Length: 86
Image 1 (cartoon, rainbow, N blue to C red):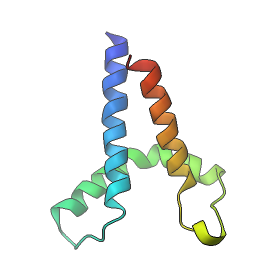
Image 2: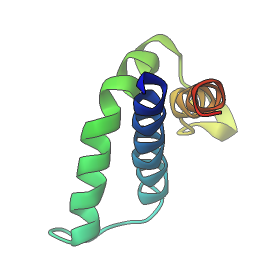
Image 3: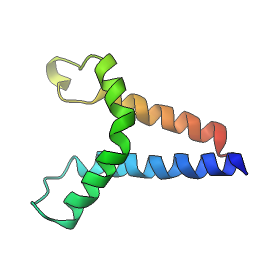
Image 4: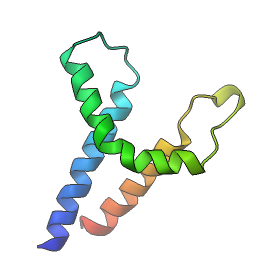
């Protein structure tokens, strides 16, 4: 029962995180529905991403602007999903 609840929470967070990643690619108009969706996705995922972003230095050079913190969170989510959702 607890494992199922953890799995549902992980999958829900993973969905919100992937939504965050996809919606950051596209420019959104003010007051659009997708802008509100992106704000919700950011508010849900930012408490996890922000501490990692503070500790991991950004990449410089050609890949500047690429979020290594987001990549670490994504890999961590995949590993946690593999462990808890079997």
